[in-house]
Image (cartoon, rainbow, N blue to C red; front, side, top):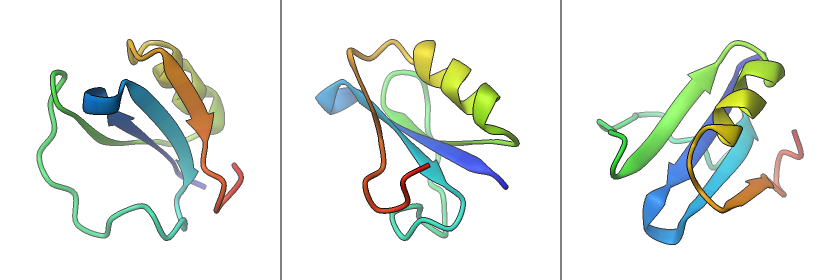
Length: 67
């Protein structure tokens, strides 16, 4: 299973999603450190570590897919 994190720097939040979540876009636009974006990880441990390093004050898990 692939895990996704969505970094939203404009609202200072990072969210963890599962690969089949309806919120994960099918086409990913370019992203960078300053704007944020969608990033995929092969396992939950790496995704959680990336969330810790995202530099946002708010961390949450998606309420739709409940990873």
